[in-house]
Image 1 (cartoon, helix red, strand yellow):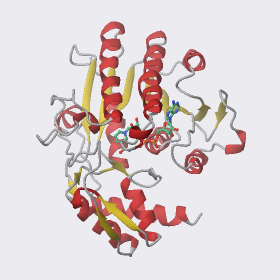
Image 2 (cartoon, helix red, strand yellow; image 1 turned 90 degrees about the vertical axis):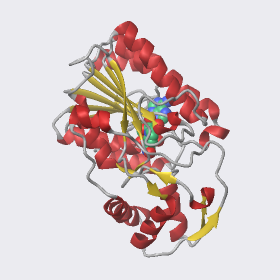
Image 3 (tube, protein in one colour; image 1 turned 30 degrees about the horizontal axis):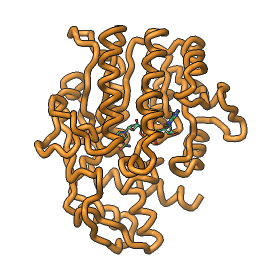
Image 4 (tube, rainbow, N blue to C red; image 1 turned 120 degrees about the vertical axis):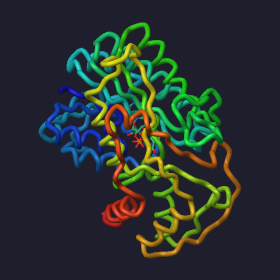
Length: 336
Ligand SMILES: NC(=O)c1ccc[n+]([C@@H]2O[C@H](COP(=O)([O-])OP(=O)(O)OC[C@H]3O[C@@H](n4cnc5c(N)ncnc54)[C@H](O)[C@@H]3O)[C@@H](O)[C@H]2O)c1
């Protein structure tokens, strides 16, 4: 199948592209390579996909390894985005490009509106003009705000996010709902829960902790460590998405738009997480206990029964194995 992966130089988009190429699909990646975090990591991921930094030209297609073509393009560039859809006519779109980062949204709100609202709208418009069999797009557990009723179910209230990031992800879901109902685009919105793993995001707590521990610097432990996260290893996320691609909504139900949680469904206490990281890094963290930060939520926990029912989804990587794999990659990457 022809599959467009947006955010292909990003953490999840990179793993997604790699897995789809390995399955023999014709994969098209798109990314604007923004500098929200160290862009060298984005180039290094692209290099793994056979795309060389020196060859990149904005707005132009760049062939990578067999089965992969990369477009250095911003979602905001609606004219070129539309031309790209007209040219390749993707059958499936996996939309992962976004401005992420709960804390970043406090100081840089505009970039969230641009990429997550306007940018996503441009994707929906392109899917309306050049119909696709299935649009799978990334939402987030942040839409649940500080709901205390756990585990989080898709039917829970999500109209009170506590960060602008969460609000833009919720806005995306609502705008998608209107577009799907008007233009019949079979779509699945996936609410991801704290994804981690090799080639991960340096702005996320687990990666920052690893950096600080290795530099003998103290780590900030928010809410005095009374935090729980439903940490999900990236391969489990990728397997979950792969299982969904061939099951667009509308196959066995009237509803063409569905929202689905994707997590491990086994929340881990932050201090236990840090302990596992210390063990694999072989170094103890200097902990600096802090109050909870604005926009942060004390716990996340995914109810994944809906995804399980559709695809038989069953995550297989536990925290110990996941952290071990992250540290194995991290140790090599930080020396490169
Ligand atoms: N990693 C997680 O724990 C997590 C949790 C919840 C939701 N998500 C969502 O999953 C998706 C992928 O996240 P990730 O962790 O891989 O993040 P990431 O930041 O590593 O990847 C996103 C990519 O999108 C690109 N991008 C951003 N704005 C763009 C624009 N306007 N045009 C083109 N490209 C643009 C960035 O350059 C980046 O490479 C995002 O939508 C994110 O909101 C991730």
